[in-house]
Length: 259
Image (cartoon, rainbow, N blue to C red; front, side, top):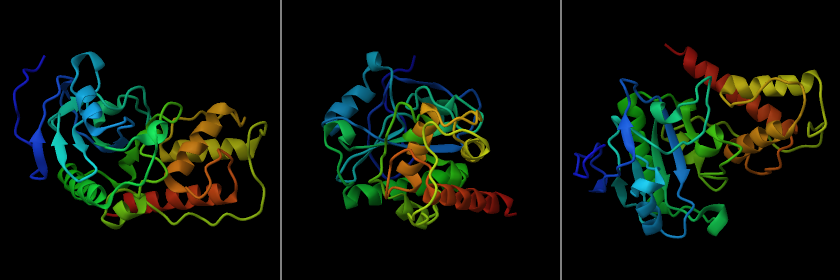
């Protein structure tokens, strides 16, 4: 285990290093995902204490307070324990492949609220440093709810993903407008459902192509809406959800194809 001694911060934005014992080597793997969370606890101090408590067995690389103060708990070169049981794009050891930022917010359990401006400015500045340092693709800047949709809702529908994308952090497309039309939902089955599942899996979500709109499918659709189509989060695949997903995949493919 690591000694509880300070390490050199990876960013000049870090005001204070607070080492967490909950970390281990990456075994040579370079991070290719930036994973964003909210703390989901009543106070910043409660979150910091938990992230540094050996018995909690959780940690993150960075913690950003509501006033924009940045703490570093784990060196970027090491594996922090922030993702838990998770999956993205054929892989399930997200901790091995990611850098995690915890953003102080009480979350849905304790009074979810808007993220203050100083906090978002700090997150954007820090995240931009990280994606440039590690050459993390925009489509691999994700929320905890993307990689663990059955367990997590963070950073949630109030997080300003579009603002981050304007600075080259994350992939974003304008959500298709909500209009009247056919809707896929629980109880439906067939090729249209299978195509939806295939498209979600093609973007990276952990979903099986069963052709049945089961509870797992509704959960993944909800996670997609929470990130990319926040105007209505209901787990139903309406035309707006389907068109937004289609546009997002096309934007991702175009970026990946760029020399």
